[in-house]
Image (tube, rainbow, N blue to C red; front, top):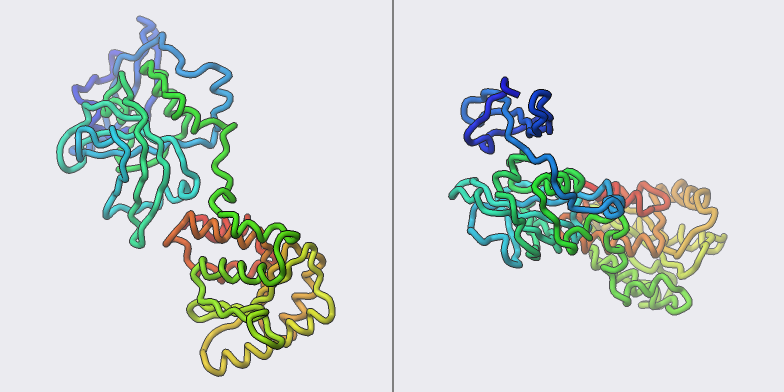
Length: 382
C-alpha cells in the first residue's frame, strides 16, 4: 500500500478502475483507485482508507429480490443547493438523451440526485438525495425532462464521495442497482423502503395496458363490442398514432374497405374483422383483392404514393398462404395486426411521444404478423 499515492482531491480525477483491497501488512481496508487527471492527462494510482465492518443495508432475503437488471438513474446538477430536495421537473438542455431512452415508458425508476461542479459553482460537498423518477419525456430536439419526487437526503456521504466511487462525470447516466447498493453498504447508508422497492425483482414495471383507458381496451373483448364499434375504435387508434384517417366501411353505403390511413408517401388500405382465429375465406379474399386493386389504381392516379394493405382481427389462423396470394395478385405488400398489437402501438405512442415516428412504421409492414417483440425492435432506440 505504501507504493500508492494518496491525493488531496482524488474526486477530481476520472476513474476507470475501482477496487477494495486489504493491506497484507496491517490488514487495513483501502479503496484503490486508478484514474486520469483532467488537466494533465497523467494516470495516477492512489488509495483512501475504507471501512471494514459496515452494516449491510439489506438483509439476504431482501438482496435476493433485487433484480439483476435493475438500474438506478443518476442525475447531476450545480444549479441550486436544494435542487434535488423537492419535487420538480428537471430539464437538461443541449444534451443528447440517447443513453437513457431505454427507460422511457419504464418509470417509475429509482434515482439519485447528485451535486457537482459543472459550469456554475462547486456544490459537490452537499449530500445526494434519494429520488423517484416518475416520468421521462424527450422533446422534439432530443432533450430530456425528468419528473422527480424527492424522498430523503443520503445522509453520511458527500456528492463528491459518491461520484468518486462510481467514477462518472456525465450529467445523467444509469448504474446497475447492485453497484449502487455496494456503495451504500460501504458508507453504512440504508436506502428508504420506498426507493428500495423500485429495485425489487418482484415489482414489475407497470403493465403497458395500464397506460390505456377502458374505451380502447374494449376492443380486446369481441363479445362486448359490435363490428361497427370495433371499426370506429381501430380508426381512432390510427388517428392517435398520427395517421390521417379516411374511415369508410359502415360509414358509407356500398362495398368498401373499412378505411385508408395516410402518412408521408404511403397509404394503408385496411379491413377490420371482429373475430378470433380469423380465416380468410374465398369471399373475403375476393373482396379484399378488389379493395386493394380499386383503391390502388384510384390513389396512384391522384397521388404519387406507395400502397399497402392491412387486416386487423383478434387473432389469425393459417393466414400466410392467403395473404401471399393477394400480394402476388395485386403486387401490394400486406400486413396483419391483432387487436392486441394495435393497443401496444398506442401504448408505444403514449410512452415515446414525439420519438414515436411513423417514418419507422413502414418497417412493421414487412412483418407478418406484427408482434409485440417486432414492435419493440422497431422502436427500441427511440
